[in-house]
Image (tube, rainbow, N blue to C red; front, side):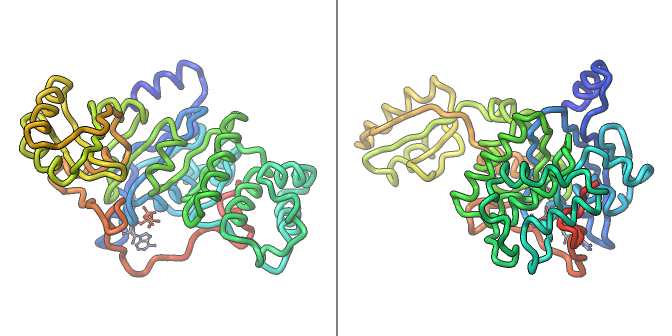
Length: 352
Ligand code: ATP
């Protein structure tokens, strides 16, 4: 959406951006997995690539890393196209797609030693440092087969960090983690960003992304429905309010009948709705007439989750997302015949 601004800014500083995709398309027979995607990840971004299951996130990341060929369009990493320049385009880029892979019968340290050796050995001296960074030093001599999911994810990041990447691409790094694991992952990613590493991560966990990312692209059925700053998106969402009352059921009826009140719904902590300030005054009187007491009425910015649904519902449902049973995204159908993840047994998959 603000791609032209990005390009100008990056060009004026002389440095090509970490990721620039234009008109990226991937078709698998009748499935249009990625449909003309444009992305601009700028230096220093923690960039969230969001969408429901099957939206095309992994496919896009795989194209970005040169693991699969686009049907159409281009993607450049620091100005280099992995399709044309191969491994050279991946200099300074690391991460994992789908899930990091390791030899389960070897220790974490041994796995990292093998990876360092594959790279010519220079990274060997960084093994202690990266293990420490992901807080696995104490478990480094344990076999990876006994690692929890969260520990494997962190080891995947350690493997990626061996090469001092300038751009880290992480596919669903927090998926499957418990709340403490998610918090640790968030702290780790923030720390890496603080060290100057640009991070592009895919996720379908909206609250997580809301806390972590400064810029986002939201994809739905292969199409970008928003790209830009998260704060801009939330501002565009307009004024939202949260209401706690003595009778939420009755209050919801009042909200729905009241002029100027939109998107009224039951939320996690009471009711939520959108309104102009002038209509909120009238609402409080209507609640009083209905004998509903107001316990709390607080303004709030729209959440990323609200906005996702509004964005996808506003195009008449063409993009197909809907509220799923888990309260986040509806599942898009998955086509058969998916290939296994491109990440290799070297645990890095996309490590340049
Ligand atoms: P998730 O959050 O579930 O990982 P995603 O957003 O990463 O989803 P993709 O894995 O990119 O989605 O899949 C996008 C669409 O492309 C899906 O419909 C999927 O079935 C299809 N697809 C992906 N890879 C292949 C393949 N190798 N062959 C056929 N269809 C594929």
